[in-house]
Image 1 (cartoon, rainbow, N blue to C red):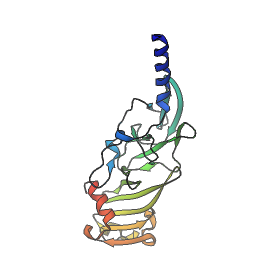
Image 2 (tube, rainbow, N blue to C red):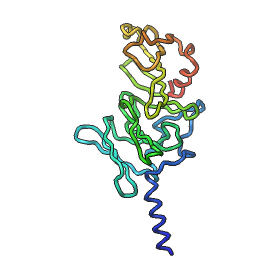
Image 3 (cartoon, one colour):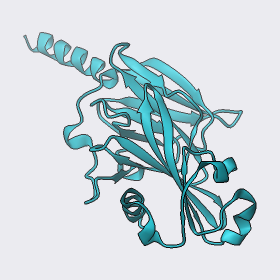
Image 4 (cartoon, rainbow, N blue to C red):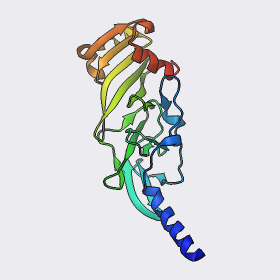
Length: 225
């Protein structure tokens, strides 16, 4: 009887690593504004077995296991192979962010697909920057640095397996350095994330943080800015 029971337990455990589960307490605690930071997410989970390694070409390979068996392998052009676990697309299942989640560095996300019973890569280009997640309003914000005097904050929502930029805030500490791009004041809000054509996509321009929409003041506060 004990042998049969042990076999059943082993079989169940072998299935757990590739089985996505509801979030509950696994989700990091949000701040008073409703955000949590990628860097606060767990870097290991008992029910998902994954590892990463750098390849000869500088890319990173991510291996995912079912029990002791290799189940899936992915290769990504990211800056490092750090793994963070979170419900990135707000479907109640754990996903995996691969990368450093840091400014001017690239990362990507493996999304759990319930229908396929496996992880699938997000669509589109690698992500740049450190991310805040707002599970209540279901959007992400990325932070990146363009130069010594510029920071970019981009609000993303999901369309299928693709993150789509809806609006961006550009903060320039030296506006004179960016006049050729149509930036004249410290804060500029643009549609999407087309930073190469700021003048055409400009929505708001101001030197005062207090004049930004409440959404952006909240985002900056959650980044500690």
